Length: 392
Image 1: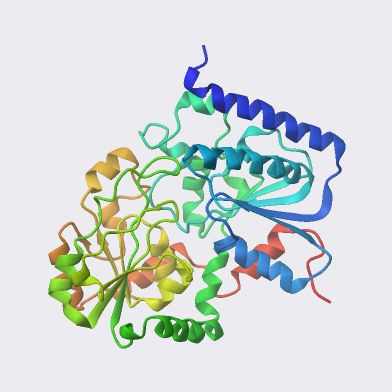
Image 2: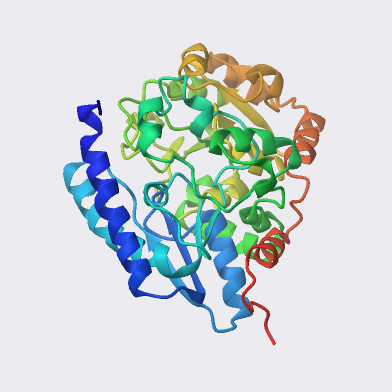
């Protein structure tokens, strides 16, 4: 007997799966159409943006479709997303290439049309915390009953990852053959080698925050907690008062929360010139570039940041709880390329002391991002697309 809680999901699957089949019957596949889609944001970003811009630079008669709509836990948000899915189904049926960067529900409820490539450019580099089918036994993950009806992370024809070492983990997470997973690299890492773009970002930032000129900037970027697109609380955050008390006025903290987190942090007026929550106007790549060091807990941006060869520190007050709920692909404390703390004051004193193991960071970078050299987007584009994408 079907779980009653699954009925709405099954009805959605039946309706939109049928709609996809109708579109497939009525319309031919456009061999020159490439669709980029994501539920992470309202506009193209990250890996998808870098590949899209590489394609645009080649400019050879390709039709592009951008389908970006953030999913929401609210009733109105869910309703508008269902309307959006009608458009998604049409382009899933008629695009030669359909490229995504995260969990994307519409892909898992269809029977893909032969001749359509569904490509996963996963948003995270390396392999850190478990996801997908690796979390089935965890409270965070999908239930076995749910997976009977919804092919979570199914239907991918290609998956691109950062290094050969992580292929087995992605094969497990996506429940797919390792021979469809390719260690070509992470396109967005090209940004760190595009030096002409760096100076304007510094100038724009100091123009907006002139009081931060000359200060050491700490990027604090904790990962998302919760299921789906909702997070109950933010009680895992660092103690900003302890940081400020130890570090003083020579430092400032830029706070960047996960895209799924809608709340703002509560900033005590005493710390208003020490803590800055950056919600818009700067991509995560730009924030990584601007910062002198990174504090995180379980975020995969540590892979990207290792390219810059700057200190990475880890703070978490819920490590054992998180391990039980989600877990990691590697033993956490032996894996991270920097010191771990569960006390904010001790973390602050480590920062002030300024003694960091840069060789550890370098080794970590070479292990998980061996192909990052500023040309990943070109190689990814050449590998994925067989349409005529070359200029001339």
